[in-house]
Length: 312
Image (tube, rainbow, N blue to C red; front, side, top):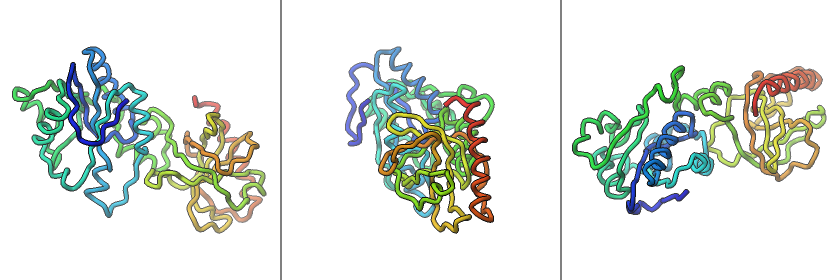
């Protein structure tokens, strides 16, 4: 897959089919659109082009609002490449670009620079200044367009519930990873490096790997205990994840740590990918470390039970 970041012209020598969007999370809805894009390109022996933006428009238009990403750009591109896209055309989103009208975006980007034969977009996608552009806008102009258009309808994405990046962000923030994962089509994950902690978990016979998250703008689930698994050096290990300030030991800073079952090697400095399966409970303050240890034993049994019933 080729990533173009310089706003250059992509000369059309055969057939170009395109879709447009930020695609944060590359969730099930995105996957349906991209699968249709790639299939259309293959059928017509052409190129599939995905137009995306960086940073997210909300980061630029509402800089004082807190906003976190579902995926890093690196992980997003890996997911898109895995789905078979030929070209990602990455546009820098600026305040100036936010003023570009839907008409100018169509003419300057889709027609002149990408020279597309067809545009495929989701039923609820908007583009251009004040979000004036959408499928209906294009449909009304279809006789004057230099390309064909096709929408991916809501029923093609999900018949039972709404899927969107904003919905997924909300579920992750609430700790509802089961629903978030259902909409994503994969287990939500974070990545980081194992750093030295204070050793309290080891004293309780529940040693934990403390994680320094690589991407500080990535969403963290709400404080609590979760069942999940870690990938370390391409090997998968189950365990339980704690997010929070550890009130029983008067912790001050918010941490992410994981007790990995059946892992005895040194972890410091290693890279880890942690995937969340399901929330077990809220973070609690216990009277003493013995009570905490008893609860952790219950949490471990619950984690094993959850994972036994889950395909990971």
